[in-house]
Length: 255
Image 1 (tube, rainbow, N blue to C red):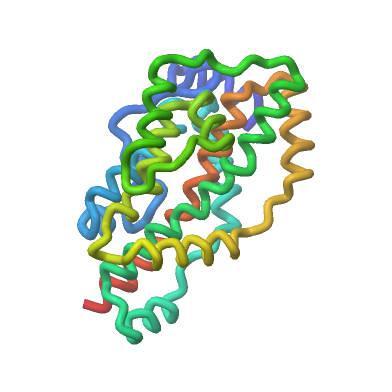
Image 2: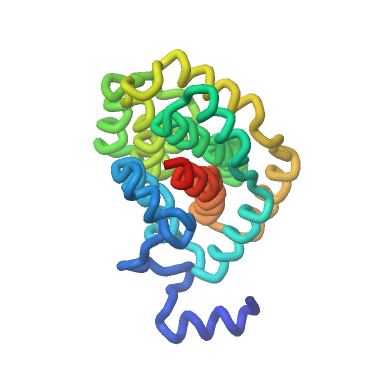
């Protein structure tokens, strides 16, 4: 989109200088062809997925047209679930609930985008003399909750600390998105979930960190806001949900 066209959008009131907070939009359905099927199969997971997908659209600083182009770019390179693999799992005795839980755990693969990109963003912000958001009581409350509650209490590592400091609402949605499948011990044992997570992390696409740093540094140098960079990472981080577009349709045919 040209600068003139984007300015015209802003004058029309459809966007602000950086973006808009839309309401009444089904962001999950825009992102996921099988959103209704997911809501029927697992409404709780669908609700938190909606929260995660919608977050940058509702709270972001980018213009909607730019946001749409970012989503188009990242989704052009994503993998999808393979029907024969689902057939094989079902044939080998896995239940539909176990297959669905596996697909939901696999959705977290896209979150590595933020895990890789945010530390670089923080380093380059420091290099550019840009301050972090102020720490508040809300930050401290969420940190304590991560460390003491939920199905997997764990220390606030540097990546999570950075996410929390930059965007506590995204932090909340992200932790819930990851943790929800782990709450369901009646579906898969924690040992199996850890093995699945190891396998998923082991095959994560290689990130071009040098290129990421180069473009991130140049973007900050020309005045791109850190919030915009984080929003791009957040938009890219939910691509793993597209696994469900194939997976849920396959499961529906196995009834």
